[in-house]
Image 1 (tube, rainbow, N blue to C red):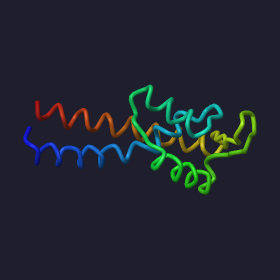
Image 2 (image 1 turned 90 degrees about the vertical axis):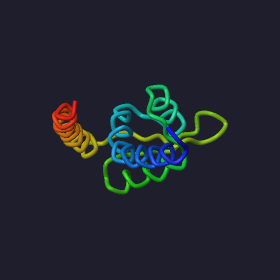
Image 3 (image 1 turned 60 degrees about the horizontal axis):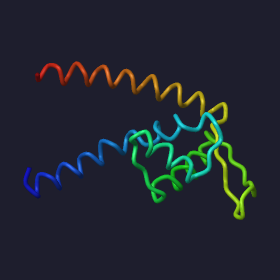
Image 4 (image 1 turned 30 degrees about the horizontal axis):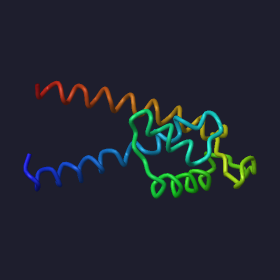
Length: 114
């Protein structure tokens, strides 16, 4: 792959990933986590995400009423912990079902070309 193809691939890969970030984050918030622990959890499972993506997303999801959060001072510095609330669990179930449907459609489409 030449440099131009690699650059194009990376842009398209990011675009493809962008649609999965919300589902990935929601899937990990069935238990309380603070930002850094969530980043570590996602990265350990192969889903790379940075602070610049995660923290605005957490604020947006909380603003949409899908997460609850609270500040805790357990270490030398306070941390904000996030967890799915009832609306968040319902949204996760809906998005998971949609993901599975889209995954099946894509499998059929891609198998046509093989």
